[in-house]
Amino acid sequence: MSVLIKGGTVVTADQTLRTDILCVDGKIQQIAEAIDKPGQCEEIDAGGQYIMPGGIDPHTHMQLPFMGTVASEDFFTGTAAGLAGGTTMIIDFVIPGPQQNLMEAYHQWREWAQKAVADYSFHVAVTWWDDSVHRDMGTLVREHGVNSFKHFMAYKGAIMIDDEIMVSSFSRALELGAVPTVHAENGELVFRLQNDLFSRGITGPEGHPLSRPPEVEGEAANRAIRIAEVLNVPVYIVHVSARQALEAVTRARNEGQRVFGEVLAGHLLIDDSVYLDTDWGRAAAHVMSPPFRPKEHQAALWRGLQSGNLQTTATDHCCFCFDQKAMGREDFRKIPNGTGGVENRMEVLWHHGVNTGRLTMNEFVRVTSTNAAQIFNIYPRKGSITVGADADLVVWDPEASKTISAKTHHHNVDFNIFEGMTVKGCASHTISNGKVVYADGKLKVEKGAGNYVNRPPYAPFYDAVQKQSRAKAPTPVNR
Ligand code: URP
Ligand code: ZN
Ligand code: ZN
Image (tube, rainbow, N blue to C red; front, side, top):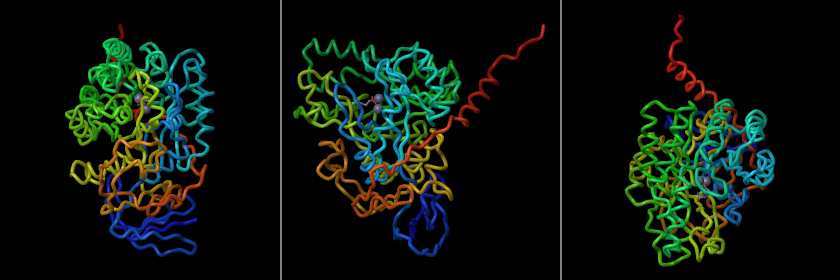
């Protein structure tokens, strides 16, 4: 099976070049100025369009069992929606319940993901600790292609961990060459503030952001980063939403620490006024953690992305329908936390990033694909356009425009946080593993066509971190 993309301009993290691309058997086989069409080959006319590495969303939660329900989007519908927006790979999360064996949870998620139509991989959350967790982390890295572990500093009484577990798990990650990732919110403070607000009669969605102010995120981000500093392990902070957390990331990076920051498309574009919507359902539909912030945080986050202090963009795609959100009708603490966007991430970032001049096209590729591939050690197989790389590509029409709506999106949820937003610049074709899976507004996907992507341990950053630690160590003195 081959696909020839002709007449387009290739845009990668470091180049913009007029050239054709030939994909054969799932890989990029040839990149050249004028490629003749072989027999039995599908041709895409990409004249006037850009060809970029398919997007990688490093933070999704398909069919996550969470807060007494299960996310409505599964691995089939979720990866298909991603393809419709040019995202060809997701990194989802295995989240073991308290005391659940890590391997059991990992195999459970692998089974759920069998129906994925695009490639996927898993971060595995460490939600508790004993010798078996220590052992299973090793098995996951050495035998199952997992090179990142997630730590929730919030969600007290469920998946939150304390500093003792974080220290144990970060140390183990260091031994294994894996990267710890962190949901940074001080869960004790959130718990206290939630209960205070509720006892004062604040029961609606407006209580959600009040219970999770930016300082709560800043404190936790700084704590996780300082713990990583002492242990000399790289750390990746997911969904940085507040200036205070970004400052913690920036400060550490300025000090030479190997810290990475991810920002969500939603946090860049939506502010906290959504929680004051007089329609309870619409306000509740925006309940996610960390919450949407006052506008000044968005400006800071854009600057973080532009300066390179934030390297990746994600969605934290975790969908709950109105009837699921209604579980918290009388009590905001019970509204399932999560919002969607896997289909829209690339187009809203293009529109508000590239069209406004905040990002160059090459920077757009970095923050939507290449940086995630490099940080999670799947580059250049993913995130690049090079001979031998996976043929995961998006053909991007910079002149096409659309208005985002839950009525027309491919997400399996009845709400869209970007509802009514008109964007200019969209995917016209998506190629996944060398097959055209989205063209001219139509999906042509095959259940189960997605592959699990092994991510080997984290050599480049660990080498650097370890060299630095040797350089810092005091020289022994002979007496
Ligand atoms: O509200 C969110 N973000 N739900 C999904 C779980 C998480 O915190 O990432
Ligand atoms: Zn989170
Ligand atoms: Zn998440």
